[in-house]
Length: 225
Image (cartoon, rainbow, N blue to C red):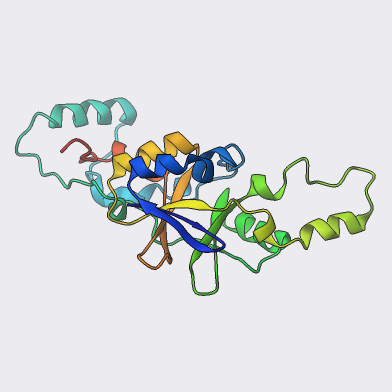
C-alpha cells in the first residue's frame, strides 16, 4: 500500500496502480530534483545482510565463485530458503529524519553528518511531511552569486527547510510487495521511499541499495513466488 504525505497530512492512499493516477503529485513536479547525492550509509555496512550469507571462507575470485555457487544451488530442492517479499524484511529501520522546523543549515548538517543524500522531513510527532535532499538545499538557481554579500549566504542558510523540501512525497507501508516498490522507484526516479505506519509516522526507509543487497544475498530474494 502506498501513501502520499504533504504539509496538510495524507493526501492519497492506495495501490501502485492508483498512485500512478496522481503522477503530477508524486512524480512529475520534482522527480529530477530528488537525486541520490551522497552515500547510502548502508553501503558502508556490508554486514547488513550477513545473516543471509553463508559463513564460508571467501576465495580470491569471490565474485565469480559466489555467483556460480548461487546458481548451482538454485537447482537443489533441499536448499533452505528464507523468502523475502515484503518491505519490512529489508528496509532500514534506523532512519535519520529532519525536523520540519529545521533551517537549511541544520538540515545540511544532519545529511552531511550521516553521509546521506536525502532524508524524510517529519513533524515533532514523527509524521511524514516531505523529503529533503542535498540537491534541494544547494540548487544552483538558489545559491548567491560569487559577488553576493555574506548576508545573502546567511539568509540562505537560515531559510526554513519546509520551503525547499519535496512535498507531497510518496511513502510505502511495511507490508508492501518489494516488486511494487521497485516499480515505483523506477517510475519516479527516487532513490528510496519512507516507510510509514497507519498514522503516517516514519518507521523506516527502503532504498534501491536495500533491494539490490537483498537480491545478491544467498539465499536470494524470493521475488517470483
